Image (cartoon, rainbow, N blue to C red; front, side, top):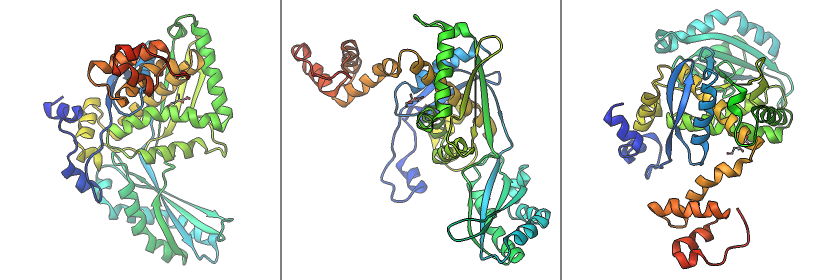
Length: 410
Ligand code: MEV
């Protein structure tokens, strides 16, 4: 990496208040997050270092450890669909919505050609308008309406600007064709034509640790997954664990994590019942097999990915050459993160691994600096008592540290 990129990643030369002022309104400064690098990832045969911006302890360690287990089974195999985004146009005040729908579909080729004229840049890069869909929503709170989907291949852009512009330009033509009134013109975050998926296979012997056999860990993970598959209350937490990994890389690379979150949850509910985004099973050789598929609307060329020095450096560190390749790495991280959570939950519980890092945060919050952070944290973990009042006692000195303990255990 260049020294400039390293300085950006270290925080020494990250986003300046001046740059921030060009990005949002009323900027008064910039906001930092820890940036960790997950290790051991092999995605489609390529070693990749994964930058993760996240405030939560254990996430970077969990991803790195599970990537190491997956490496024993050949790493992650990931694929992605063409980068197609959906723009929605809502057509109201139609006398005959079905007839309007037919007219739109009859003029599909001509409409798509018009859209490509509006954005020759994307078309020049190999993207452009690909498809048109039209649905009548018969029963809404205000009566029937026609919804037209314009599908655009946005290449390495996230695509919001491209498809929103295309939808706005297309609106007068749709009004002319249908005789209706086009109301909303906006992308859909349920980007189900822009999916990324990852698979991994963990040899069963690799899963064994302590008193836990590999078979027991594997079966425990599958039992945990089955719970999420059947129950929305558990699925929400299960998917949150996936998004711990996904969002951290999305944020580190300057991408829109709200769009990813919205897409993930809507995709998880696509059957009409909210469920797990991932799937775990036993392979024919007895190993643990996992897969994850979710929408991935990402950019490697526009917006903050280019303006934010640390986001640029993060992309450089990963060595990804396209938004699709970035999506394939990120979905692999999501699968690894899910495995980390399920493995911990299915065996010794989540708190044990969490406590060491959590204790450091508690120590810092109590005022510890330098080597005292580790000393106070270690002591609290040994005592099984991770609380700010105990951290303060320990910081006040040896006599206070040996003094009376609080009642509750962490
Ligand atoms: C915590 O941030 C994420 C987990 O709750 C995920 C899960 O329960 O699967 C550990």
